[in-house]
Image (cartoon, rainbow, N blue to C red; front, side, top):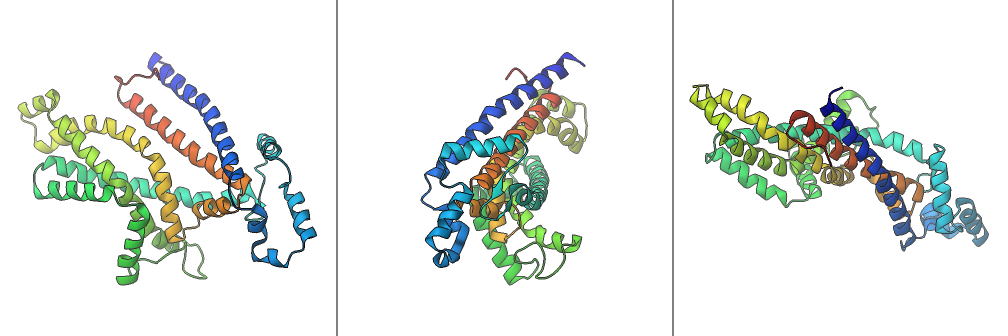
Length: 327
């Protein structure tokens, strides 16, 4: 193994070790916020049936759920179970947390991965064309649209997309994973995934496309690109083979920095489109002060952000030997 590879591996190891106290702090923070919540978990557990429950039944339920214990005891019980591989039982879903996560997380990953791939493809195509034809009508349209979309929240884009493409044009289903009563076949899932994935992609595209455009414009002014043009190479060869590779290095880092917004956008898009991912579980767990489920979902979101940042930094270090790996 070369010294460069050892340095990159050491960087990854340091970042992974650093993530442990971060995840612990997030877990403690969620428990403290839950303790300060005005919602009573027992009301969310019973729902409307609480009006038919006797005082003794409610007291027994509190005891069974461990709600009479102090926050420290509840956290210690959850942490001990986590270390033994037991994520606990969700009070809001009344099933093991592992089952809730395993049922919903794959659909969220599908939406996020497809949305991210679409966002990257759209950004690369439009960003390269805009920089290649700087000052032209396409460049002006892409720049103006990119700045305009930066301030629009994902849920607004989702509502507009439903109104236009689902209700008015009827091109896509309104919401859900499949049609009512239909099985989750490839065709059903694809047709229902298309619009939310596109909305998620568009919500992330403005920052990416504007960054690609500006980075490519900077790369086009560098000496090695000027030298390639002086050798008489075709313009598309100069742009795609000489300027674009240099411009893509900071783009990789930007993708990692956009992971938190991608996670937040996915939650909002899932909620609007009734996509059966972790979004509805997050909302339901928060309202029910469901400690076991809420902490696990928060840790998953935090881990996604940390891993995305780590992968972006490692990729940048691998692609560009000039990038330092001391941090």
